[in-house]
Image (cartoon, rainbow, N blue to C red; front, side, top):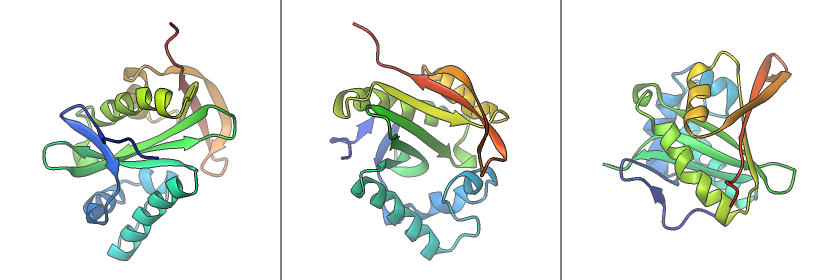
Length: 176
């Protein structure tokens, strides 16, 4: 289930991926960190880009969660991804996100998270959303903190086939 209407704050929006978003996938593959922790192709071809977008659609169809393009509202250009995964625990979701290198530093990821969190509380009835971040990924840690997430702890040898620790951040609905 995708948010309807699509979520936007007038500057940043979230929407279903389109096959015309291939430039975003190509740019994501230029950052060594994104392909390492995702299914973004590291050596881009148009066919691999389309296959990536189809995988994002399938996640929603299979009930795994919701993958949306982060877009600039002015022009609707895709600049990143926000993935809201459904965890095995009831009422718990997890976030993954990235923004292409040329669009970083402008608050797009934080804005996207701030858009989807209230929707997830209401539409999906989530009671907890968590995110796992490599300790050295300071930018991602700042995104989560600015979006209201709190640090909870460290999972040792957890990410990238056990080669990296993960810092756990979470947010819960406001009380009252």
